[in-house]
Amino acid sequence: MTLLPLAVTMGEPAGIGGELSLKAWLAARPVDRPFFVLDDAARLASLARDLRLDVPVREISEPAEAGQYFATALPVLPVRLRTPATPGRPDPVNAPATLEAIERAASLALAGDVAGMVTNPIQKKTLQDAGFRHPGHTEFLAELASRTAGRPVEVAMMLACPGLRVVPVTIHLALAEAVRTLETAA
Image (cartoon, rainbow, N blue to C red):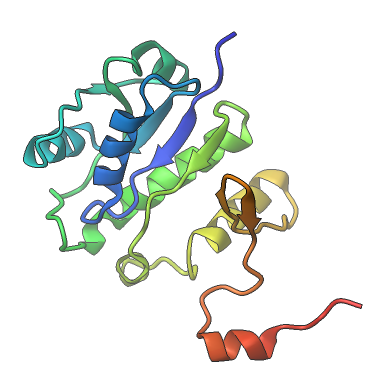
């Protein structure tokens, strides 16, 4: 039985997401569940060379191909950058690619074409400078899920590790403000 792959978003192209994806592929083989990255394949191949990581990159045209290539190369479903990314220098010109990766991964997950999605870190200010109106991933994913469902959908961000799962009840707030906003349920 072939398991559905995970879809991994590019995150901020000038950030750590590409490196995380490359190193995750190195650490994941052999693996029971393959993944693919929605990213610019040329950027990832260049980044692998710059970081001296032996990670071959293979463009795929659909998620189902990820399992076929995962053992020998990092599968990449192409999302083209508008301008080359410079590590450490986010550029709002590439914000559409970052958002496209998130939207496509969410669409694939909501359609049942992937087992789930993993989001690499985004640079919220860069996205907001390009017109993004959400505080972060969670709210954006809520909008995408609601649009697909045709009704409001409740979402929550979960942080998980073996033996522990935590859902924050406040996000994007200073600690002092977060404490003031908490209520106990009766």
